[in-house]
Image (cartoon, rainbow, N blue to C red; front, side, top):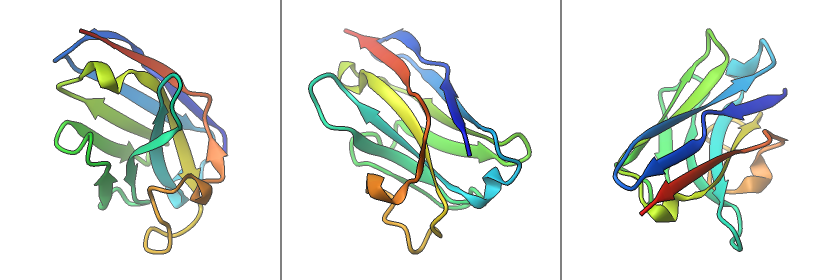
Length: 126
């Protein structure tokens, strides 16, 4: 499956931004989808993940309560709505897909995701 992230941009602290990821495969609904981010000089880190059906989600502690991940399997897209943004949210955001089941996957670990998009830049100004 090929992934294309889009929607990044510049936003002020406290603002909101939504990014999305389009999957090429008609079977995209068979993949667990995750979002990761990488800030300059830092390792890539887990942000959020959503199960195949969309019924289950999980978030990193740093974004819990501010970010919402969702998917539309009819459109083969996954979104990440980011609210109350902080300068420390500035990073390149990557979407990723895993063909491991939700229960078997350690959603926070990158090694479980076999497919990655190219990333979209999100910059939060103070």
